[in-house]
Image (cartoon, rainbow, N blue to C red; front, top):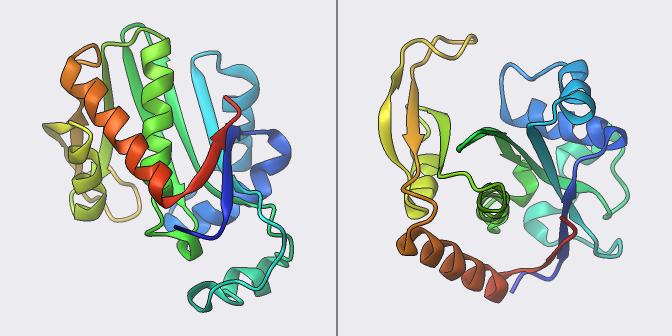
Length: 201
């Protein structure tokens, strides 16, 4: 089990510097700060979440010791945002707008944790499906979505403005189906064995 504890909570405006630090490390064309502020403060259909490390500041494992982002952005507090995501709930559809994990915290299951939390939000809102776009070249992300019942739903040609790569549209199975509920429950149980985490949603 990972020797850190995490909490999932609603994104706050005061966390945007940390969110945008992760975004710059993950995406070539990050959103402007004003777009996130607008989503948080004015978009009633949007839910934005962060994962925060709640462990005390202790020496990091070798694979994350003194990451470059600490030197560039002065990160000294282990109580920090390490992943984030956003979802819009529109009528019967929940659309994942963004999801990213700090490069120093990848392969721990935090992306999976956020997918599960967004699925819970979609179910509470009585959505019947979830959708998203993902780069055609991002096979790792596609495999994770397929684990949770997403399938290919078409292509958006030249969707990404930085290099005009196509986007693969992915759609979940019916959220009310027994198989979807089982995927979420099994995924959450698996994460409980790997991670110590709680939700404040």
